[in-house]
Image 1 (spheres, rainbow, N blue to C red):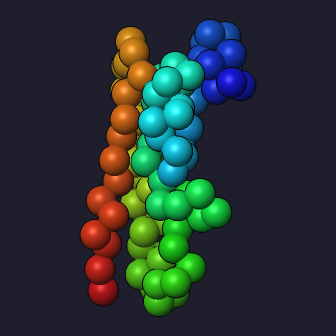
Image 2 (image 1 turned 135 degrees about the vertical axis):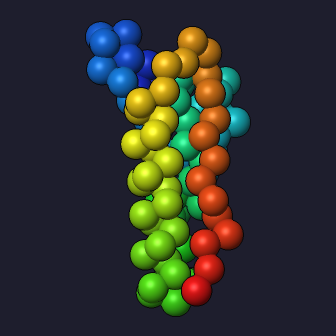
Length: 84
């Protein structure tokens, strides 16, 4: 997995994935829980404004993950209950 290789090279990586159990199994270090397989960074079935807030929440969670010192696969969960 490319995220593991980048991490080994000293570049922190936050992997956003709806398949987070697989990411944990292969040893990705910082895993951000995504919404769904076809749309890991949002939910197009939501109203546009709420989807935009959800996307921001996911990206902010990924940025927090990048700042975290981890020593094993770690799951970061964004607040998926973003509402209007």
